[in-house]
Length: 461
Ligand SMILES: *[C@@H]1O[C@H](CO)[C@@H](O)[C@H](O)[C@H]1NC(C)=O
Ligand SMILES: *[C@@H]1O[C@H](CO)[C@@H](O)[C@H](O)[C@H]1NC(C)=O
Image (cartoon, rainbow, N blue to C red; front, side, top):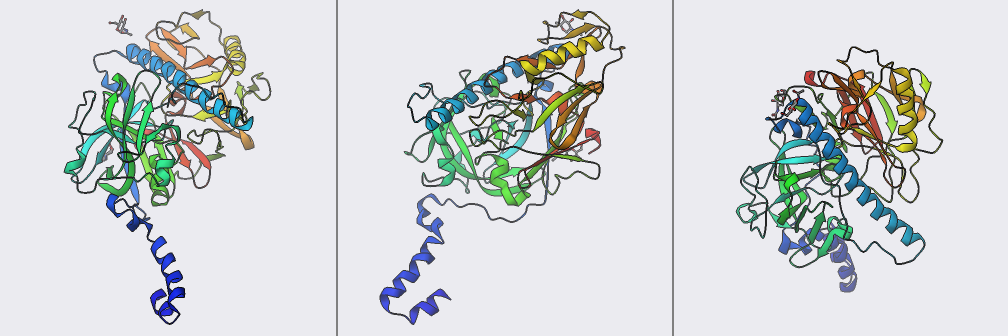
């Protein structure tokens, strides 16, 4: 059509008509890379069965598995602290236009408590990935390996896949790497460091991803890691970022999955043979009776899913938490995030301390030492104790009522512990952890900017 109308005009006008034709198919300009985003066709229902990472530690008994999950939570909190500190410092130095950036290389969160199967390439190569709602990049180890950790499944070899291509540095996905982009030769290179000596480094690439029962999605940007280190990753071959930033799986799937996903986490005490469902797109829906709260987006830390907590209620009485304790600050500090990768809820000390006091007054027992499992408030009891009711209050008067199992955990036959910890007030956001989310179907809707939840027996989904 454009050609027809143009052909009737003078030559120089025709030239002007050609320009939009070329730029509208900018893919072809980068033909050397054969990189192309997938189409926007809706993929329908995708279901993925996630396994709890601690369940792999089959030789351990429950209290030992809990102990290692609590240990990982604490390590994750330090990673989140490092990540937040950096972003806050950066946002402050930008607003004050001073140049005293943290000289340390950027660290990411990149860890998690659940694993999912994913396959990359054509023909598909399966691997187990850590699911992380606290970081964005999707990555796997790639051949040829400069240095790789042992993974349980064969490593992905890009040269054997017909759908592999690298992503040009001019692409917005490469821009989204920010400080983690290390160069442009060969291709858009990245280095993701996780602050505990583990890292992945390689080339940002595009591939067909297969997730769930055979759903294939073309043109997903991922990190092809040729140099990787990290004991923490060795249960799988990489990671799937489910944060809110541009590089995450949910952001890249975008309108193909109606910009939403949901999960329903089984209890940490459930048997290892059971899995927790993760849904994308049309499968991510809650039937009647769900409650919704607005999500908050931070321009400083676009990766995190912030939720608008307003207070905590114990036995119907508001806990005496100073006003503003949970506010997300404009410099990126504070707030509360929801995270599947932190096992116990982490509260700013200004909230934790009065909550702990209130719980102690409500329970007629002398606290016991919980240091064996890394928890703070414990009681020597077989659990036959009447527990107070606990509710997290959110913006708009929406209450998240925690069943007893979602905040007190029977560590061993005679030790009952609060599945929450305090953190000194400062840069770290409070974190709504995964024990608190278990047996709730939780829906992250990025398009509507809402988080919805509904008590659900997850093994019935
Ligand atoms: C996930 O688990 C459900 C319920 O156990 C099962 O019906 C389904 O086949 C599983 N799906 C996949 C992709 O493994
Ligand atoms: C778990 O195993 C450890 C180490 O073997 C042992 O000390 C502990 O008593 C066990 N806990 C339970 C609840 O069986």
